[in-house]
Length: 181
Image (cartoon, rainbow, N blue to C red; front, side, top):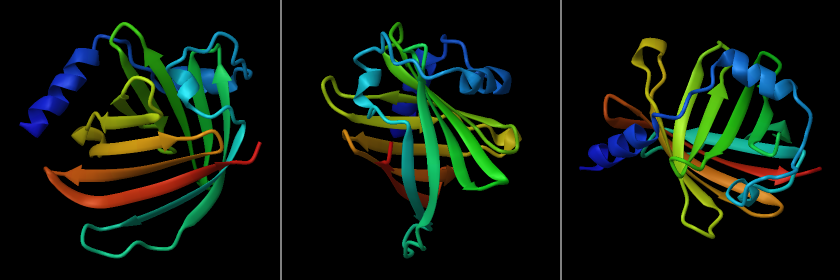
């Protein structure tokens, strides 16, 4: 039943066009412009830079050490939240979030260093600052199913995500982003 609910969420939002690598790179090159931002996207902090800490574990295991890095963020055209950074020079990713008013869902694309794009759909309770996400798995490109939740405040955001392979949880990630600019 849980899988059917996640599938129904994914299908209901699939009519909205996806962003590809070139779209994401183009958005990342545009200037910061928060003018006209929707109330749905304004749940994200008004920030330009974050100090990020992430750690992971296998189910039943202990969390490893925190990995720390910086993320730069901007709002583009009042419609997209664009974040870029990563834990190493050779592992930089770009993340784009948009509110799809027609589908009444959040959409997220993460451009990975290898050029693959992970696409996710999210929902939030009205008036809240939490978003629950489910990714679109792509077995051909090694992209697993991920289920996560993120919570936003004015100065800090946090999240937790579970990665699944063949229906079983294989990794748990948690992170925190503290606004620095």
